[in-house]
Image: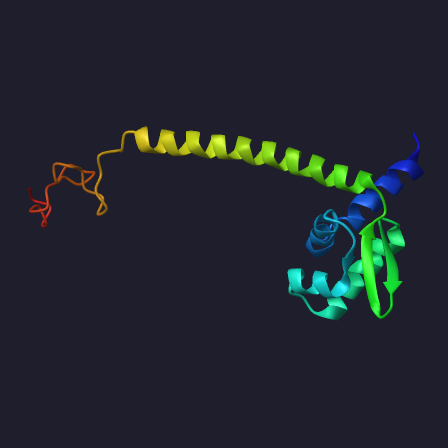
Length: 141
């Protein structure tokens, strides 16, 4: 078994395991984007974005070029966009299955007969679980 290969794959997926990084990659699918535009879209602190971009850059998944005083980021290749599309398809399928299960559970709950008890524990005819009515307070009844 090629442990190093599986470890490399695990590291790759860990690198993707941050919501800001995923959002950056999604934004970069539209094409090279200056940092200032990423900041506007993400609404996070510049230092936080810088940290996440550094992780993506070190992994080789994005590239950075300087145009004057502006740094522009881009996806390193089209495979990243393919991976994000595949992830969306997988999640859509999973969520659809969960939605269908939720609908079934709700339908079962709506159609399930109740036990005939009110909120105070009495049956619909006013009797308690031991058969007494509300007027049998002394227990003599």
